[in-house]
Image 1 (tube, one colour):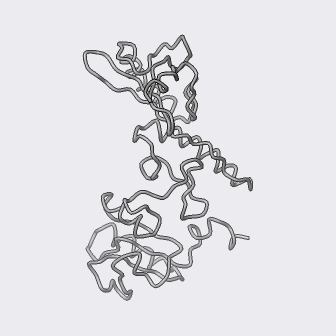
Image 2: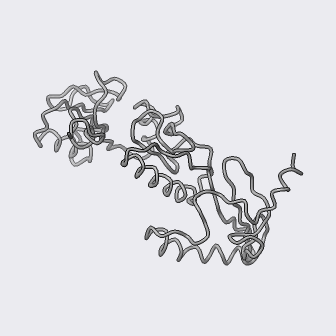
Image 3: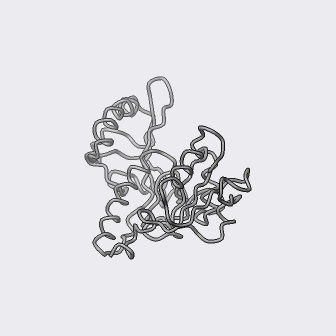
Length: 246
């Protein structure tokens, strides 16, 4: 059964590439590669590092693209700044270091049963933390659907919500998605608010300050923020403003 399981490549790989493998004493790349070899792994082991021709008894390759075959598993032990280029080297990126992603299901376009969210994905969203939070809810939903043998649903709409501090104890709040630009209105309750969209107010600044305990006590604990969904709502927004802009 496990030989056909979608996690086989990760949990029981037949070949492993160690990107950043090294002979430098006490380096992370040296430790990881040595442990793979010393652990008795029976499959193919590919050290990847352009600085070496060989590491021990193994031929060392300059890049993932230079490997004789695509490895089941790639272990990356290089500095964070090098990862975007490695994503492209692995054939998963868009040429700019971002993973090719379906913007509505958040599934990777070049890998099976892989989802991307936040700054890793090449979807047209803001880099605000709220985007990753809203995406995470959709990824969990779609992961559970695929585990149950169902198709992922196109639920992601690029919802972003963020405070912009303007100084003097005031802030602006914006709420938008892939298709709808920020507009004035009330948030999170229509008419009532109490926060104002696209307006500079003292209450928005206080809302920004209040978000810190919400982050630590609700978001990190996996709880939902009341009245704020992963998909953007148009309730309370003055959508007619968009017509006047065009």
